[in-house]
Image (cartoon, rainbow, N blue to C red):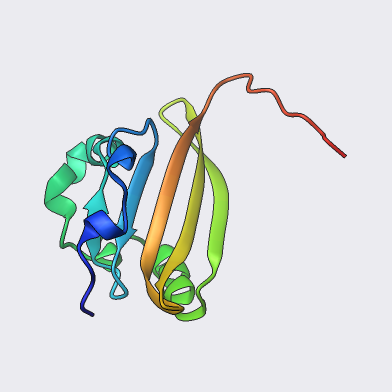
Length: 120
């Protein structure tokens, strides 16, 4: 797939956000990591992950989810706890001209004791 330059997709201000952003193409190859994502994945290669396939670093269940998201254009949202930190993981297809162009994953550390408000 011929992707436009990433400057047209990811704005400069996203580079230093205090949350992880990982972007893939439609073949599940990593094409972008912001600074937080790169540092989060340092032990796996950090920036050297760009060009690598998500299929090579995920278990079969996760690979099935990735394939489903790329086929359907869906979204997958869940929380995890790892190394004492709770995180919100938001994964979704992204589109150019209504065509699935890849996946984006945003990972946000949730502070301990984070308030929850019911606004019904």
